[in-house]
Length: 492
Image (cartoon, rainbow, N blue to C red; front, side, top):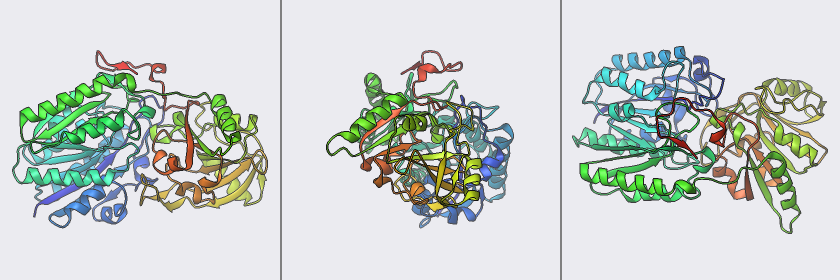
């Protein structure tokens, strides 16, 4: 029985966003738990689709687990220097005071940038390696959008990544990490393979539900053998303007030549697929017109408009109103949109109460897009914002989005809007049901999400349009000005 320290420190950083992830942001709960220390980690993550819980459930029967720290914050602009240093200091001291450890498991993201560090995880792993020495196994679970750097490869004994987007396999990734740690504890020497891919892939085209990602993930899994423990293509987080931004291929195994062959094979497949990463981005007016035309067809069902560029899951504020304005202009009916974040609006609607009609501006808090929407809103339902995720991505998450409301504008069959006090991407139907909206009952769903919504909403839709309304989670990377990418990296 080994004594294994476990911890989590996660943030996906959009360096083009002006917002910051402060220490208070990590303390505050949202879809995932806020800052946790010690034994409280076990209860807070139990049954949640997180790598740390997958690891706990897999390792508990055979090892002694030492819970250290958990810290997670919603995607945003860079982590503040004081937040990174405070949490890194806490984790370092907890490891120092934990007594003898045989291994470390870390639940990380892999795309954390702070105000003073381009490679948050690489720096953290280097510090922890100095703390525990050169031989102790350190295994980290990483997000599918990790920008894997040479420092991360060097200082971690092994990196295990999600294999799905939407991320429905986070807990399974923790289970795979436990298998890897057991190999290392048994004395197995693992060779590392690593290649960086010289182009950035926009977020909407990274979904593993479609090609080419689906086939590339399957190819990586097929390369596992007696000599290769795992081979993975990781598409990276393209909204990080750093030297090592972008996709990579990694592999681990007991035979160096077999590992290198697997990495080469998967890398070549990725390079060959370069032209296949793409799709159509709709302007708001075109998307709404298409949705209304679709609804007039015989048997026309539900259509989803993915408000990808205002996705809170990529650093967006979740508060732009451009698609809502277009829906009103084109007199759309039987629409539900969400989750829009505006704490001031929620407070006013809550104060007015169910049945009231209010003329309070909605959205536009971040200053992006067309600004606040000013029209009469009828208050339909109120909620506490506390509920449990039921979809495959947020399964088991005890969400706390602050007070929530559902309002309607544009007439009795018009546009219903789910509004929260804290931002969170619309990736779980429970967010809507919490305030009395059943997504299956609408003809048009407008979801502030890029891809994760597909895990719980795609089965409802006859068609899905990716809409490029204003927002910081830019889908066409050529609109951005990168200044720090390494030479040779291009934009798709």
